[in-house]
Image (cartoon, rainbow, N blue to C red; front, side, top):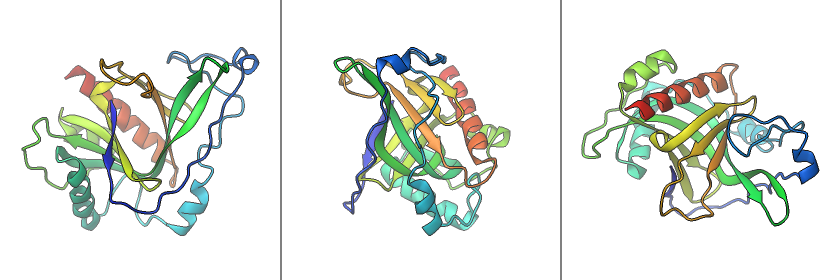
Length: 230
């Protein structure tokens, strides 16, 4: 399940409008594993405004690793919003969240920006929120998963587009699939959730370095598998 965490009031920017397609376009698209989603011949410009933002906000360190001096600060900020966070396993400088919307009345469907975009943290969590988390970071991939050691995991987006952050609990994701552009999450259909709540979400990860997207995608998928097994 994804959820939002409140942020202090600040400047709020308007996100891009949806990318949609009609019925005739849908019929010629190859189906992928997740239900009701199709690849596009011309995918939306997922990082349309990322290039200009990143040019004015250069990232000093690797997307997969945080400097030790910054790890404590990052962890303390995240724990204010979600005290159960135990450690930061990986960081991506920028990620954009999309939801897949189907409009039966208009016969259209497509990816829409969710209004959440910012630094992405892949985190381990304590099962008991009262436990004390310590600042730590590891190389992503196999070593990161080993350091995780079966704890709960989440993807945390520190939103620069609005007042709400996003936390995606990997244990409540039904399926995960990686495409060329997006890491797609099919969320569990939880009882009591509003009918308008997103069921399919896509995560576009900015590749500031060649291996950034593949590294974070692999780590998230492995953490999701372990979270579902536990």
